[in-house]
Amino acid sequence: MAINEIFREMFSEQKRQRELKFQQEIIRKTLEDQGYNIDDFDTGLELLDNEDYENAIIYLTRCANNDNSQAQYELGRLFKEGLGTEKNIVKAKEYLMKAYKNGFKRAGLLLRELRYEENKNLSKDVDMDFENKISDLGFIIDIPKNWVKLDPKNKNCFDAVAIDSFDGDVIFNIKMQVFLIEIPENMSYCVDLERVANNMGCIESVNFNNGNCNGKLICGEGIDGTCEYIFVSKGRRGVYDLRVMVDKYLEPIYEDIIDHIIYSFDIIDKI
Image (cartoon, rainbow, N blue to C red):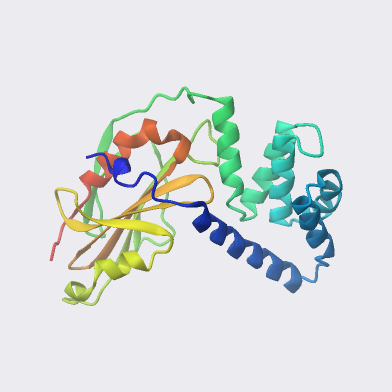
């Protein structure tokens, strides 16, 4: 059964709003710590709520010029929709990319929407050639041959990090990585994967066997316009966390790749 079919329609706007509110509080606290006057920011958001877009742009621009990532996001959205100003996709992309690079991940959703609107079919040939990788972390997995292989930040726990982008865009199409949480010898059997899954936030999970090992299959929807598929399983060395993150607009194109990667995963030293 295709993995994506297991998780359709599991996510609500309420979950995404909670994530956005949390991100807004981080921005507010950062601005206060840096000594910025947040009156302009508050005024800009209030004007947005009142749909006074022209005046909101004045205040938000001041904040955006001081690297306020949410102000950059809001300006990008206004230019994208033509609210309070003429529609300007070039400026929209500029502000949204700044917001995304400054950590406001919700900007990624609008960047993905713009990319999709400009490239309806994304005219991308999907290469289904894979190469098998045997990791020093104790697992085996297939990686698409034409993806960019990234060096993990910590080779003691990360491996098989690879990414596929569209025309070199930083807003990736699909990304995969495997993370090992090492457990003291002979103690992995004590780990409850149900608890592991429940501690991962706004996600849904099901029991899953990929043909090689048992575990939990988890799916989450990011505020950056991605869907994240996670397969957690455990071996003698610890808990393995395989993640495949995909642009939700490309999902139909990549379903077979998602399936192939997750179904190819195997732990060498099983419990």
